Amino acid sequence: MLGPYYFKRAYRMSYKSFNKLVETISPLFGIAHSEVHNSVWNFVDAVTSCSLFDIEYPSDISNQKEIAAAFAVLSGAGFECCAGASDGILIWTHKPSERCCEESSCRPQKFYCGRKHKYGLNCQAVSDARGRFLDFSIVYPGSTSDCFAFEGMDLYTRREEGLLHRDLCLFGDNAYLNSIYMATPYVSATGVKDSYNFFHSQLRIRVECAFGMFTQRWGILRQIIPKNISLRRTIAMVICLAKLHNFCIDERDNNVESLLAIDELSIERRGAFRLQQYNQSTIEGIHTTNSLPLQLIGAGNHF
Image 1 (spheres, rainbow, N blue to C red):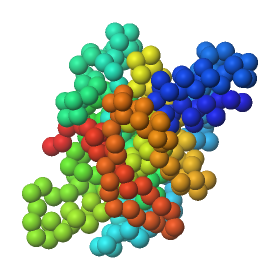
Image 2: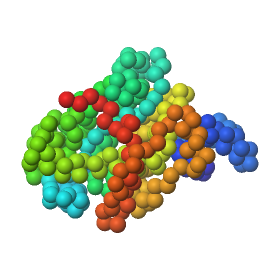
Image 3: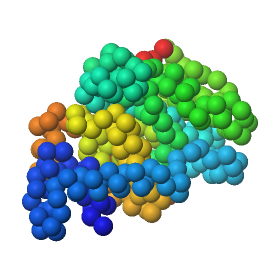
Image 4: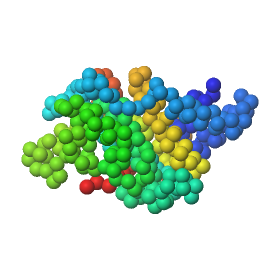
């Protein structure tokens, strides 16, 4: 019963502060320190294994058109073809242990992202206009380009097999290949092409806003994942947080509160970064965050 409470508290604060909280509260309930941590991971396992929370791009054409219609409301140019915004974010970790490298069949250097100067995992996501994740994947090390990581998603295979309606496509930045399924900006554009890039970014920013909501809701994603959490558990934890992110949006829980001052101070002392400000916007009364984790977004190499 304590799992959900401790889970929410654990990932909105620093790991060190969470340990102090456990040491203070667990005796009141007559629960061992280790059992509290076990309850958190049991909760993670329960969420990740529950099919009701699965994140998979819808195959139903009517659902795809609803996604595109929501993007069209935000488009200053009247773009009606956007069926999702795609981007990548680095999940910041310590240098993986030898055991983790053996399990993943990757050398430690593969996890180092030269663009962000951090070790981590390349997380790929596609969001709708509200910031809800439509597809989510975290299976490649930090040095992997966004294009390659995206092509490793099940979504890419499904897209090649005709998943998207013929009039719809995804919007992504220049880290991806432009195709009939993926619209990317012009490079070194002027005139009309530059105008297209502006309106293109107007919709593409939705996935960055989704990452902003994601990292603001779960403060642990703004800091380096503790050493004692393995890569396997890190992946499970991030997927669990993504599913809960969607659940909150589905339940109209859009009040993404800032961390408590004591927790904010604690994680900043451990090297966590502040979110960068961006213009706020709303869609159908749903507020989206104006804070973006620019230090981690777009970790993969661009063309």
